[in-house]
Length: 444
Image 1: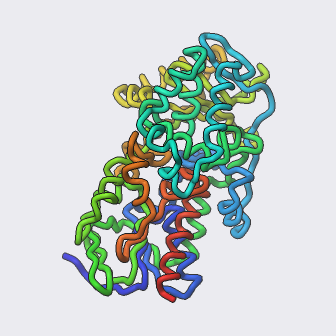
Image 2: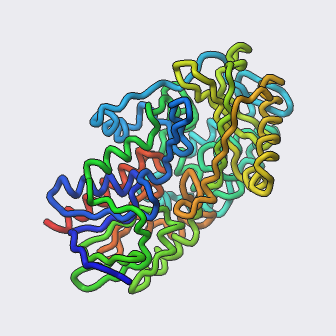
Image 3: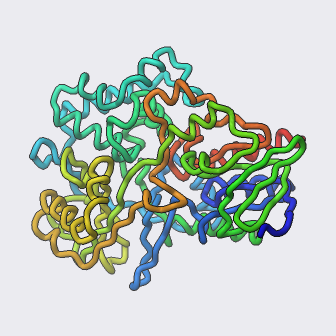
């Protein structure tokens, strides 16, 4: 039975970084806000877990970079510390069966060409580029096949970009989607590097602590275990219905991934373009695993712990160890078809396949695990994919203009709607601030 009729000025759907950022900005402008979160926690696609030894690791988004000014502002505001990503030693590329310390020339040429194509791309409206239709028709995989001087180069760049950045396969995304994402993050080096790049440092206590700090500021305005089922627009208000409560507001910010936003019932129904966008923007598919060790044997061999591979279930690794040396952690990412393959396996088999791949990179000592943990965001009912959602081929030119366009009193947030640092915590914050600004502007 539905109870109550709460009447905030604005209802925000979702207590991730986008929703919480929107709510804080709205409250700072004197508006009353209620944040409705389907989960029993805040943080969205960040999730920090404290291990028995007291060290916290991140199962979701974790890194921040020096060019990500909005998340840096929040971290500084709350007095939260960060620690640099370990980077001493050689980076590792597995390329055509060899272990290399530098990116092969054929692969670097492809990375450089991607950067070149992004130079004139209008980030706020990529569908307006003169070549948008051509780029949106072809997949990144087909472009790589045509441009690559060596098949291994196409594999390495495809796994590094479509996997490591967009959490999928090169055949899942159009060239336009790929170029937009790269341009949004400032280029290949900005996105893929540790020192000075998007993986520059991580947050002490886990990135979820920033969301928890924002939620604490909002207090009782954040309501957990409240999945939104229906949003009804009236001429002068909006009604938001959860399983057991309903709210009447002047505006609503929908700050959840499009794949979830499309499952809400809207009355009247969404415009065809917005509804189509939700159907064609699935979440990425990635598995994140932590391989724990008592000794950093990869450091002994001169490796930094960062690796990118052109084959096998493991695409990337990073040294994710705490600075106190209490244990050592190789964080492992599995993307695309390999992630789907692993999902069909038992937990023991998943572990075996990942460790076998680590052995090919770092040697037999990679079998000396002290513990192992794997997390699948696609299986999370209130996420359905990570790192973020991306339009399928043809989606930008068909549905791009609907991405941020308000529908009556409905406003859209979430990192998928960001212009800069799309897919990252910084982009999520940007999107929340932008949605709040739309409401503030319409209220004055």
